[in-house]
Length: 111
Image (cartoon, rainbow, N blue to C red; front, top):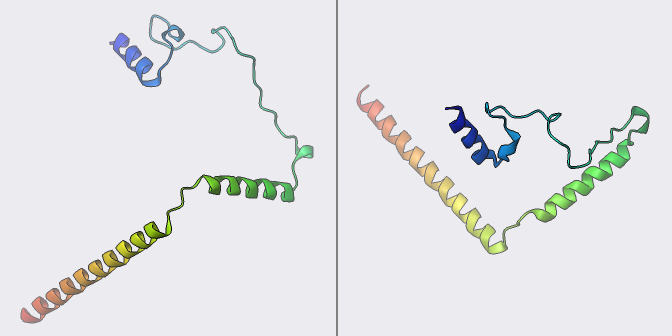
């Protein structure tokens, strides 16, 4: 049973099987040999914090770069999507209006 779980974990996460012991538990990082250099994240000290203006400019730059990645629809597509939305809204409005009229008639008949 443990072997099946181990195999599923290896297939699901595409993990190298050498990272597991015979009992199915994953090795600790301290047990593994470190082939790559240790990459440490540099933290910003409170005295080195960036000013509000600099953070705002970084934010605006990020927004601009993400907006470039967006696939904007063409004019023809926008007209098609807008028309479909308006038709759907009209259809739903008429449907609920007719249902409301039917219920009003039924209610007036049985009153």
